Structures are given as structure tokens and as C-alpha cells.
Image (cartoon, rainbow, N blue to C red):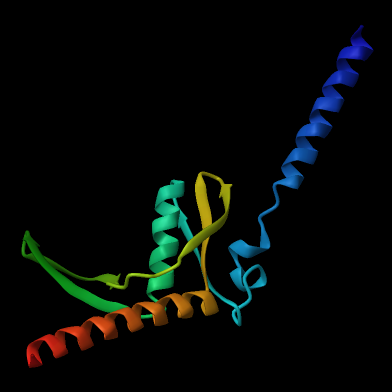
Length: 159
């Protein structure tokens, strides 16, 4: 009975080790172009504490390829202290630099899709991509529709 329990525990331990090894970090997390080549797709990986936040981060990363507004707010805090006790003076000076960098984009992306996702140590990774040619076709169609509307309204004003 004792051998059976030990053998069962060894099998369970080996199964756990095999399962842990199979959860290897996918290559696309660090190299999205390996899964979605740059000549066909635009791809970006997002990261967050949930799948929804990772998708938002991936969407933002793709949008920043088109436009990104960077703002930097830098503050320098200087502190000077002088203490005198029994005719003995001690002085200290301390300088602290604080920087707050914000990256923002106002882009709306057409034809964005979300692919694989991966969870590692409480962080979720997701890949967002768009197919360049198909997206270009969609945008050209939208441009043509808008051009027809402009032409229509110009003709209406001339009548």
C-alpha cells in the first residue's frame, strides 16, 4: 500500500512538471511579427491585469503607430534644511525629480481583430492585428462613399 501511494504521488508530480513545461510563453508575446508578418499585417501585443485591459492596451499600441501625442510633466522638488543646536549647525539639501509621461492617441482603427491570448503570473497578453490589404480596401470604399456625398452636396448648392 505504501509503494502504491508513493508511486501515485510520483506520477502526479511528473504530470505537474509536464504541465508546467507545456505552458511555455508563446513566441508572439515578444515577437508578434512571427505570427503576423509585417508585409501582410500590422500587429501589436497588449498587456493587462484582465483580458479586457490587455485588448485596450493592444488597440492603443496599434493606434499609436498612426499617431501619438506625448506630453511630459516634470517637477523638481528641492528641500533645504538647517538645524542649529548648541551653536552647532547642520545643513542638508535634497533634490527630487518627478516625471509624468503620457502617451495619447485619438485614432479610430478600422478592421481591427484580436487573436491569441496568453496568461502568465496574473498578467494577460493579447495580440491585436489588422490585415493591411483588406483594411485599405475598406478605407478606400469609405473615401469613395464620402466623395460621392461631397459631390452630391456641391451639386445641390449649385442648383
